[in-house]
Image 1 (cartoon, rainbow, N blue to C red):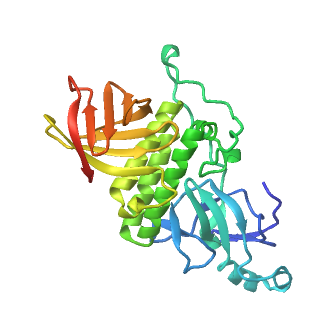
Image 2 (image 1 turned 180 degrees about the horizontal axis):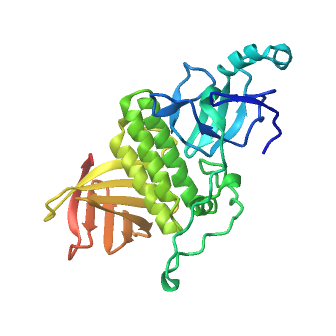
Image 3 (image 1 turned 120 degrees about the horizontal axis):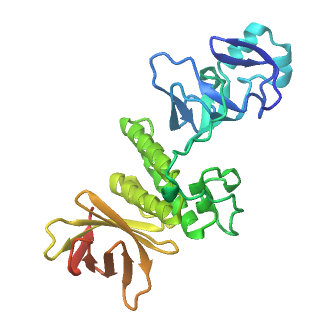
Length: 322
């Protein structure tokens, strides 16, 4: 807990004798909401700034990154009356971090919270015990995922920080999500995007091995590119492309494809209500992906695909879509 001098808690509003960058409790909880179901998180401490996320009501374990004094300087604060301090604090902002959301929240919606508890692992029989989480490892040189590896807590995060290929795919997911979020800011679709991203992060954080992490990242790349046109805009920072549609001889349904050019590369292959993520393998001609009793080989607009239920590869034509 950082040093703080608590003056009072009035109607759930966090009040201190001196609010400055870095002061206050380590963690907040949401308070003071009436009809709203969540609190807007903005890119800057300004009510007209862009909404970058939302925090649900009754949320706890919201990390405090520092607060301002509602427009008062330290000298003005020291001389202000209790009433003036209270009025200023209703306009104060705190920079916070909660799950995948980082930005500024009005302090009147924040009260002292508790540190998020580590999730309990379910008991499993000895013969089927879950793999031991990977110990903390220093980031590999040159690996720069979208988050701070020094603060990595989940096993999945540690795997990403220790693997250049996974770090590259993590950056791509973050880039695609930012493009979609910017386009949907303050629209009804933003809530759905935020919800799916939060659920995806929850799934990712259950992974204990590299294959699980890679599968979830590549499938998220496909979901974002498939669902949001702004995520598909040409960009020199992109390492993904798609979705494409493969129409194959003897296969009654089209097959959706997306690709990630990491190390190794990956292909997302989706059909009916199923999907596979296949890693790239060496190929003498074209590009080839293999795994889980499935193969995909591409060369220009042609492809050959074998799904697990197929006896042999089928000839396919690739086209835009998905």
